[in-house]
Amino acid sequence: MEIKEKSLEYAPGLEGVVACRTRICQIDGQAGKLYYAGYPIEDLAQNSTFEEVCFLLWNQRLPRHDELENLEKIFRENRSLPQEVIAFLELAPHTAHPMDALRTIASLLSCFDINLEKSPEANLQRAIFLTARFPTIVATFHRLRQNQKPVLPHPSLGFAANFLYMLFGKEPTPNQAKVMDAALILHADHEMNASTFASLVTASTLSDIYSAVASGIGALKGPLHGGANEAVLKMLMEIADPANVESYVDQALTKKVKIMGFGHRIYKNYDPRARIFKEYARRLSERTKFSRFFKINEKLEEVMQAKKGQHGIFPNVDLYSGIVYHQLGIPADLFTPIFAIARVSGWTAHILEYWQENRLFRPNALYEGPAPRAYVSMGQR
Ligand code: ACO
Image (cartoon, rainbow, N blue to C red; front, top):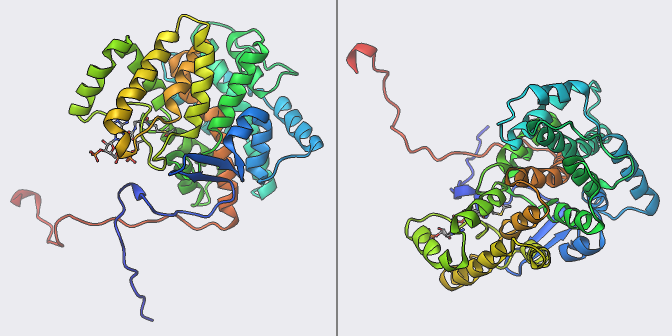
């Protein structure tokens, strides 16, 4: 039988390549619109909760009242970590980046999963348990590295409020809880981004969901992706004053250094999530001494609009999220772990969906090396 070669086209960074079909998330990059299963992100951020959005991503429909109550209950009942995991976090170097701790524990949790069942139902349950535990992992590691006792999960607080409670050891105000809840909603999913794709590549080998999620965490960490929120805060500290923005941008662009929090592979317009974060950042900044960062960001927007706006480079989700977290008193190296706390819902939703019609990811590479040649023995090189 003759097997015909398909014509192959090289797409650097897989730009413009459609890797799978999905019913979970849609982006209109030209218009700057984002939808989860058809619902605009603005509506969800304002009216929904992170728990409800998790249900939406996993089921592609909003839950009924009893279904939401049930998911909230399962989340609350599964927030605790096995003692051995806490012991591991105690022993791990407390100088480690919290993303490294999170990636390691996500992987370690697979060793405690004695259920061999691989059905969609069992994998959805694993997705729920992982999502329930991510805030506890991050908060526990953060408390331990500060020589503080971990705070046990609160038996009745909602997802976002409980995370802040475990982090700081006191209940957040309703406003703080709402801001964190909205932040989790805004980060829950984003179609075929690098970390979701990394998760799917691992999942497509029919490996397990823990391995796939660990792949996602690793990809999210990089500053071109989720790590940009931490990098934005570093940049704001370096700029220090709105008066320094113009020269900072000029120098960076001359050296071809990217300005963190700007640009996106898909959005060629203002990222809708950045708009919502900006509003939260504005409201929080009005009341505190950190408003300097907000003013630097506004100036950055103005300068970048003038220099790069015509190239489709606009603020992305990471430009203002860091200011919001900073206002909540959260240290910069927890910004990307917070992204992961939210995104594990999206990763697992895509993994579960992809497994319904799984096909191994196996692209090609364009070979540019030497033509076939004879081995040269050591003495003749
Ligand atoms: N600052 C300055 N110039 C930029 C920026 C930026 N932030 N982003 C893109 N450009 C320029 C590039 O230098 C390039 O210019 P050139 O054609 O003259 O060489 C052009 O715009 C196209 O850029 P690419 O790097 O090809 O765009 P790509 O789609 O590969 O990159 C990315 C997207 C990685 C997000 C990029 O915009 C970037 O590095 N941004 C800064 C990091 C960041 O904020 N990442 C978070 C993204 S959102 C998220 O993942 C959650």
